Amino acid sequence: MKKYLLLAAMAALTFSAEPAFAKKQLVIVVKGLDNPFFEAINQGCQKWNAENANSEYECFYTGPASTSDEAGEAQIVQDMLGKADTVAMAISPSNAKLIAQTIKTSGATIPIMTLDADLAVEDAALRKTYLGTDNYLMGYRIGEYIKEKKPNGGTVCTIQGNPGADNILRRAQGTRDALSGQKGLPALKGEGGWTEVDGCPVFTNDDGAKGVQAMTDILAANPKLDAFAIEGGWPLFGAPQPYRDLFKPMADKIASGEFVISAADTIGDEVAIAREGLVTALVGQRPFEMGYKAPSVMIDLVEGKTVADPVFTGLDECTKDTVDTCIQK
Image (cartoon, rainbow, N blue to C red):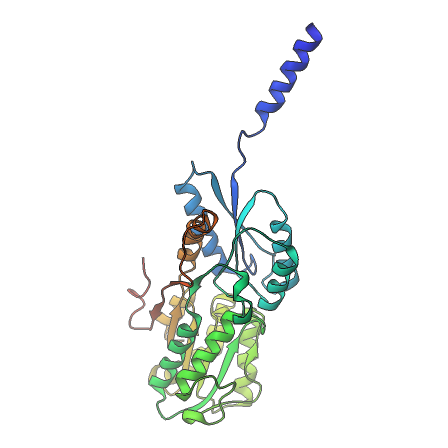
C-alpha cells in the first residue's frame, strides 16, 4: 500500500511540474536576427506578449542568425511548421521563391501570412494576407524625391538587397516608374531623362558594408553620377561611419540638390544622418507596428475571421528639415 501511495505521489509531482497548458504559438520568421529592422519587429511582438499575458496565444519570434542565410530561413520555416504548437505563421521571405517552395512541400494546414516582404504574385495563394509596407509606393516615393531635385533627369544607380526579395524588387520598380513616368520598365535607358549606369542595380544581400563599398566603386566609375536610390537602408544603418566618411565630402552637393540620395528606412543612425545632411530623404517603414499587429492578425486567421489582403502599415518620410517630427510616435 505504501508503494502505491509513493508512486501516486511521484506521478502527481511530475504532473504538477509541467505547465497545465502550453500556449499556442503565433510564429514570426524573419530574414535574419542581425538586422535592427527585424529587431524592431521583435520588440512589437514582445509588446503584444506583455499586453496579452493571459492569452492562450504567444508571439514567438525567430529567424536565422544572418540575413543572407536564405536556406537557413527556409529550414526554420519548415521546422516551425512541423511543430504541433505552431498554430499560425508570419514570414518575411528573404527569397520569395524558396519560401514558396518550402510552404508547398511542407503540407502545412495552418494559416500562413507574409510580413514585411511578400511572396511573388503567382504564389500569393499560399498565404492568407500580407502585413507591412506598400513596397511599390515606398519605392515610388524614393523616386519622387530624386525627381523633385532633378526634374530634367540624369544618371542613377539603385542599391538593392537580395535579388530574390520580392519587397525590394517592388520598391525598385516603383522608383523606376516614378522617374520615368512609365510603368513596368525593367531598366531605365533614357526614359523620363533617366539612365541607370553600368553595374547597377547593385545587390548587397542586405550587407551594409558591402553597400557602402559598392557605392564607392560606382562613384569612382561614374564621377558625374546624379543620384543613388537606396531601396533598403543597409548602408546607412549597417555601416553608418563608412557611409558618413564617403559622403561628407559631398555634403554641399547634397544640400544644393546637385547630388541626390533617396533611401529607405528610418532606423539606427539613419535619422541622425539625415540631420547631418548626408542623405536627401528617407522613406521609412514601421517595423514595430508590423510586429505588434501580426499576432492579432494571425489570431483572426486562426479563428476564421475575415482579414483584409493586404494590410498596409504607413510610411514616415524624413528630410533634414523634418527630422524632429517625421517619425510616427
